[in-house]
Image (cartoon, rainbow, N blue to C red; front, side, top):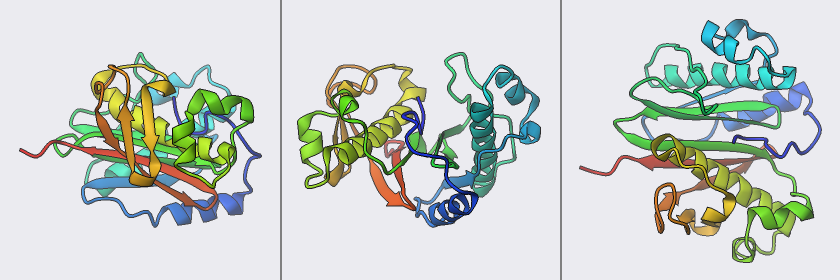
Length: 233
């Protein structure tokens, strides 16, 4: 699972991508988190050998997004004082973060983003980036229930479903490294006006668990963040 999964919209122009990266660079994150951005990059020269091996059979679009995501990740690591390291792909195809680090990577609308933090301070991080475009009507019911859409009224259902989709992707990615639980969109309920994602099935973090959601629309992109701090001691 990852950003841009619905594949909506034409590829942005290069200047539009640069403008989006500049806009996303202004996102205000809590202290202790690193934020990085890059364009998709077809040249794999920026990858570590083990990262390059994971892309040996991938299509060019996937290679470019993967490479841009790793470049963004290393920029994010530098912001929290950590050296550039390989982020290989695990058996489950998710990023394999170095010990003591949590993070998340996404791509959409011609932009790759990464957010990272130290595991001592953060339990889980999830980021999702989507073009701010409506979902096709036949997909809306797979993503959101009526109450989730109604909470965003008078926004049209297609646009509201994209907002819910992005928030659920971020929440899923934040919980996955700790729980390793795989579940569908119906396991969560979003209340985006209050910034809450609640588990409604006994999976992942558990029935009734609440995950925080932050969502902004910047440069024509929906940015969703699920930032879960470690419990206070």
